[in-house]
Each structure stands twice: as C-alpha cells, then as structure tokens.
Image (cartoon, rainbow, N blue to C red):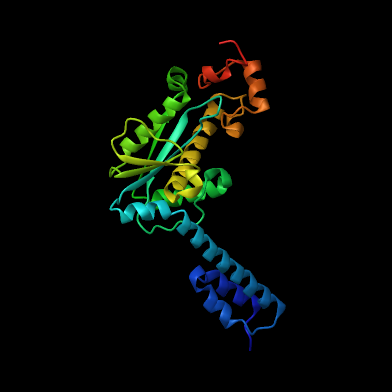
Length: 256
C-alpha cells in the first residue's frame, strides 16, 4: 500500500537539504500529482541551495585569497546611517571562521527586515568575533559624516577580540589603523565578511531608531530610521529638531 501524500510531505519536510536528491529519487516513480508536485518543489529547493552555495563561494574569494597568503582573522566592516537626518552612524566589524557557510548573506539593503534579523542572529552565533562602533549626531556635526564614519569604524575594529590581522572595508580606506586593509567597491555584495557586517550593523541601528521613535514621538523614526522622508521633513518643520537630529543635515529645513 502506497504512502499517503501527507506522509510523504512530512518526510520531505524533515529531509536535510543536502539529502533532498536521495528522498526525491525514492518517490520519483510515484505518478500521483500531489507527489509529483512535492518532488518538483524540493528539487527546485535543492537547485536553489546549490546556486546559493556557488554564490557564497564567489563572494568568499577575497577571504580565500587572503587566507592563502597566511591571514587568518579577516574582519569585514561596513557602516549604515551615513545619509539620515537623525541618529548615529553605526558600523559593525565581523570575523567569520574559515569555511563558514551562512546562506543568504548579502548586501543588507537587498534583504527584508525579517531576513536581516534572522541572519543577524546566525552571524553573531557563528562569528569568531563581532563588534559595533558608532558616532553620535554631535560627533557628525563636529567633524563631518565621513570622519565620524571613520571614527566609528576604528571603534568597531578596536573592540574585536581577537584582533583581526586583516580588514576588508566597503569602498573606503580607513585612516589611522595599524592593521592591513583593503577597500572593495560594493564590498557588501562582493565579500561575505563585509556582507555579514552590513547585516548586523543595519539590524543594530534599526533597533536603536525604534527606541528613539518611542523617546521622540512624532518624527516616525520607527519607520523612516532617521532618513529624510517627506513626512520626516514635515515633522521637523512642524515640531522643530529633537536631540538626535544632525544639525548640519537639517539646516536647510529649519533655523538652528
């Protein structure tokens, strides 16, 4: 007597992704439409898994090259929040272990909030080390956003334990750090370490802006994360700036 389709579905659901071909082969001759669809669905899932592994191998090329040269503690670093009108600029640095596979790592801007949060938890669990650095709105106003970003990056690097022996940064060369480094244009999509850093930095800053949304209601920080949406700019004009607004960024909207 053949198995019920729900029973077969349960088997597929419990099958590790690498074992899908074996399970699919076991039910390949079952001509019931429900089983045929199950096999097709999981074969597509396996194909997507292989494609993702190939993509991850491609974006691990910088790390692989550095390890072949003898570097072991390779940190990726990225920032989030250079453009907003309010809140800090946040940076994160991440050292991933060799041969670490975390499916889905990519430029954080390409991921949904739910996917970022799920990946952030996995990255933190698997990382050799991760750390954050930030620069306040006051620092941004005092030394400008670029220098504040560099300062925040230096804080994140200094907080890593163990210390990195090489840093991969997204598009920039960080001044005044002793460790060897390389800037990669669009690094958050080309380096798995930088991509990981971009994800946890985004999740950390978004959570911070949610809190600021409660502390300073009316500006919509929980939605706009401090960026200059039309509603946010209108709120600044109506309510005036709050303590986390960057004065150098909003001077065209209100008198400071």
